[in-house]
Each structure stands twice: as structure tokens, then as C-alpha cells.
Length: 368
Ligand SMILES: C[S@@+](CC[C@H](N)C(=O)[O-])C[C@H]1O[C@@H](n2cnc3c(N)ncnc32)[C@H](O)[C@@H]1O
Image (cartoon, rainbow, N blue to C red; front, side):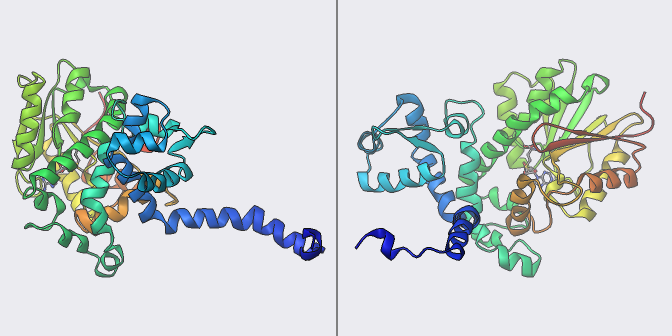
């Protein structure tokens, strides 16, 4: 029997097939990406833990057999992994059966590339992944229910991490990677010549202040963070020979006073962690600690004022609710601007940056 006889024709069928091909196929592919988020993330994470993309970058095109041998695993699982990596466009499969990195993998997933995001993938895998299973419960409870996945005391992920030095390192490495991606923009976009002593609240392992110090030889700066994190920052500062200008101040920003000798207070990737009330209180506390002419700077991914994205804001916000604190999110430009004004800052300047980061600067008094 010929194919022509068993295939139904007719205009209605033609329209329906066209609709399936043009509209539904694309819709279903989009749905697969969302429904398979956990599987596709684990595809990425497994390849990252095997350091597959660095291997491909160093060795050039490889067959599955070569990969299996180099990674000391069986070929069948590599076949499954490569199917996922190819469909996700992390690698390209060539007609001779070899694979090579896509542009994304060669730039972002190759350990030899300075702007790689490998530590961010590991943070998602080792710290956030299990916790995110509880997103639905977190919505119902309006609390970080996912924190139960990581043992420890205290109400926030940061406190729990201090009981797990291995996880704290994973976390700080990821924060450093985010900072490295972003903090150059901060250093290049803000004129720090008018400031002498900067405080980086929740400054983590010191990556931000070290970069700012390199760009601004006159500037003194310090991180203000938990004691266990300050210890890491101090090691990094010493390793980079910057101890004459940089310091780590141990404290809880909600309890301990900010040092009074600073004229610029930076909140980098920090106000996203907390509730609106706490952010308002922190900006007010910063305003009161600053001398006239001093400034507070908010630096993080900003949510669009129409609340339609960007993806990075939609990616980060559930983490703050479900795991980090149960109260933060990536707020809009307008919210930060309003809170700055309420805190007393007379001049509030906003600077959108490339990609999704933004800077909001509140100056105490008039700009000189
Ligand atoms: C999301 S990380 C941001 C790190 C860094 N600012 C950056 O831009 O990469 C948040 C930091 O805030 C610190 N932190 C959390 N709660 C804090 C508190 N109550 N007082 C001071 N630091 C805190 C954490 O230890 C962590 O280093």
C-alpha cells in the first residue's frame, strides 16, 4: 500500500498539521524546558561535576568513547549525557561522531575561561537544589521552609552555612563568581575619587573591595560580615597584599553599629536578601552613619518596574523565599529609589548597566 493512500488529505488536516508544526511544536519545546528544568539542570550539573566542558576545551573534538575513557566512566551514561548536552546546545555533535563545546560552554563552563560560572552551577547543585523542592510549601508558609535541608542553627542560610565549611566555601566561591562578573561594572561606573573609606555590608570574601581598591589606589575599604566569613576575607586580603588599606569588620548588620569612619556604604547583592522593612531600616541606618556628602550604593540585579522580568530576577527571587531568608527577592528600581528617599537621601541617582545589574546611589545632602 502506498503512503499516499493511508495519509488523510483535506484542507482541515493540512491546517491542523501546520498549526502543530508551527505553533504547538514550539510551545511543547518551551514546555519541555520548563517541565524538565530539574532534569536539564542535572544534565548541566553532572557535566560540570565531570568537568566535561573543560576537557572538551582542552582536547578539542572528542568521541564518546574518548570522553568515557578520559572521565573513567562507562560509555552508555556518556551517550545519555551527551544527548542532553547536545539537545540543550551545550555541545555540538559533528557528522563524524565527535563533539565540541558550544559558544556558551566554551565561555561559561570551561574552567580555563576567567568568566566561567562553574561555581554558580555548583552552588545551585550542592546548596539550592534540594531546598527548591520546597518552593510550594515556602509560598504557603511565606517562610524559608527549604532551610531544613541544611542542618544548623539560626533563621538564615548564612548562619546554617557557618556550620558547614565545605558548603560555605562552595557558597563564597559562587558569590565571588557573581561578583567577578559584575563588580568590574561597579568599579567602572561609579566615581569613587570623592570617597575615602568604604564599607561593603555583607561583603563576603572581599572580592568586591579588593577590586575597588585596585581601581582606586586612594580608597580604604572593609567588609562587614559574619565572623566566619570575615576570616575568609582576611585571608584573601592578606594573600593580595592589601591589608594596609582593607579590613574585615565582624558584625551582624541588624544588631551591630556600622563603623563611624566610613563615607560610602555599599550594599552589593545584599538588599535582595531581606524584607522591605529590613531594607528600609538598613538604608536609614546607613544614612545615619554617613557624614554629609557620604553615599549609600545599592548594586544588584534590578527587577523591571513593570514586574515582567528579567529572567535573572525571576531566577533569583524564589531562592530568597525558599532558602536564604524567607523574606527577600529582587526588588524593582522604583522600590529602591523610594526607600532611599524615605531614608533621607536627597539625591538619588540610578544607573542601569549592561545585562541586568543596576546601581542606585543615594547621596546625603547635595552633590558637591
Ligand atoms: C549574597 S552574599 C553577597 C556577597 C557580596 N556582597 C557580593 O556582592 O558578592 C550575602 C553576604 O551577606 C552576609 N550576611 C548575611 N547576613 C548578614 C548579617 N546579618 N550581617 C552581615 N552580613 C551578613 C553573608 O555572610 C554573605 O557573605
